[in-house]
Amino acid sequence: MDNEEMDLEYVEAEDAEESGEDGMESENEEGTTDAAKTKEVYLPGKPIEDGEELVCDESAYVMLHQASTGAPCLSFDIIPDELGSGREKFPLTAYMVAGTQAARTHVNNLIVMKMNNLYKTQEGGENEEDEDEDEELDDDQDDVGEAEERKKPQMTCALIKHQGCVNRVRTRRLGNNVYAASWSELGRVNIWDLSKQLQAVEDAQLLKQYEREIVNEPVRPAYTFSGHQQEGFAIDWSACAEGVLATGDCKRDIHIWSPLESGSWKVDQRPLIGHTASVEDLQWSPNEASVLASCSVDKTIRIWDCRAPPQKACMLICEDAHQSDINVISWNRTEPFIASGGDDGFLHIWDLRQFQTKKPIATFKHHTDHITTLEWNPNDATVFASGGDDDQIALWDLAVEKDADQEVTPNATAQTQSEDELNKLPPQLLFIHQGQKEIKELHWHPQLPGVILSTAHSGFNVFRTISV
Image (tube, rainbow, N blue to C red; front, side, top):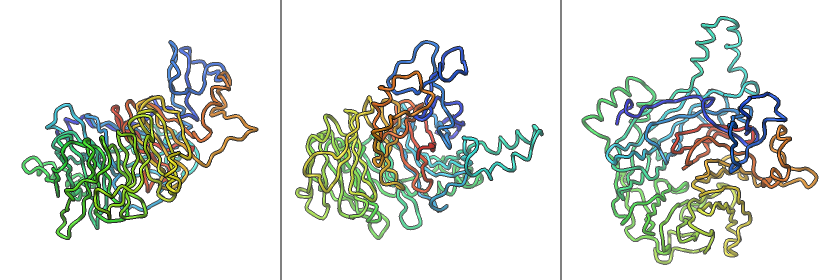
């Protein structure tokens, strides 16, 4: 599948049906501008009446873009770049790798993407120096048109043919190169060196040359492991031990990978013993090289010490951590917290210092369907985001507490809404983002503060809210 077959497009989010809790509005068919009478905060699950439509309040976003790649990409990861940390000056640039789930097994790809020229979509505010040049253009419509054209977001892609749908993909920079590990529906795990693809997306001539080369000589993985007895989804690179990887499958097995000096990997054929059903997610400890967390369809969360023999490596277990399958976990980078989300729609926060009590320190029931993705903000230890099959991404801040003297009102224009309905929202809920269908995965960009990238059956969103 080449770029033409992908029907690749990148459009600004004004064309999307996006909404944030701070700015989610419904409007009647007359389109009257009397906000107090016709507009209100939309809460997920509320029925839309005839003549009403969801309208994005763009003032709730600093930036909001969307992209499409033809075949849906249900897993992706952000590629660490060398452009620096803490980048807030617009326009922004981000790199990522995504895996397709095409209808035909033999036409799937890993897609290495460069998204650049990501301008603010909110007028006013900070970084106005980026727009000074445009303001000087005044009434010259041709120049204004050129300025608008220059501010359109851009996306460049380099493809890698992938055998089978990509269940999940994760990246890690190892030395001077970036590697991606991908789970295939065919039961294999591949590791790919993305050096050529990252060079290709930087230069049009290199990209053309790369596209010609892969026609006759497809890219081969740096390493492939076929030892899992079933396909899987769980996969994670260690943040503390360079090149160490863990993979878990739908049977129940977890295998630990170790890098070799030759540039290859050695996979321990002995799986970690403990889970009794599919391993859905894995997370290495952010500060202990041998410690791993896992969650499963068996409703347990387990903490492993990989220095121990596989049959004795499970050190802590929380049984019945959710009422049904546990789909995702996320390990906080600076605090001893693990967040979990499951098919029951519950979000739980676990304190590892109290893990043996088997009681979460916080529980939120806001999502109305399966939670499919969850991640702590790498730059703010109390903030995390969750998303799921209810077509919403929720932003949370554990540091927020409800003021007994002040009721929660997410939007001042919601005067016609039931105050009781709004005050039922958890005070820790900062923002609700909508517009994507069947949300599968989100990631905070570690080098672009507050920026979230998300993927769903309907495509990608790249956004930053006014809340974080």
